[in-house]
Length: 224
Ligand SMILES: [Zn+2]
Image (cartoon, rainbow, N blue to C red; front, side):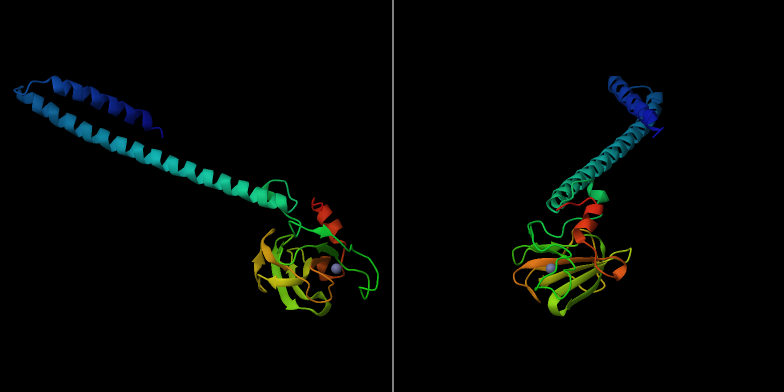
């Protein structure tokens, strides 16, 4: 970078030299040809400097274009995350809602004829086939039909918390797969013990008993 002013200086010197050269008559004295040799060399140098400057400019343009593409990608990501209830910096997202379009139905802890014990999760009524996304990043530890839970995907978070996604119509992940927050894992269905298409979401800290998924989401700053 520090050599740039010197290079620009060379360019100016050569431009000036070229002007002088044009003023020299064809039948000039022998010492003129020595000067012409030096001038030709300086001209070559100037062309090389210009080539370097042009390359540097193109590198800068390419960098700018890449930055634009990254900005656009981030804007796209921000819009997607907003549909899942997250409105902060896309690069800091930790949790999202599992669905973009839903209606909260049976809540956590309910008792009634539909459940053998307390309702261990939160139900989200949604259209069959609605994409389900991971509420947090983790590793898929199970994808299987699990009796009353129907087609269930379990994602284990880095802290050992299990997130269960139940009654799915289809799954789009496999055991062992690492999933990012807001990445699609399957679709809403009504498999297992279910009276209509919905997602039954369970959050089980330390792979133990369930906790209220809405409270867990709320602690992560996500409100349905
Ligand atoms: Zn349920």
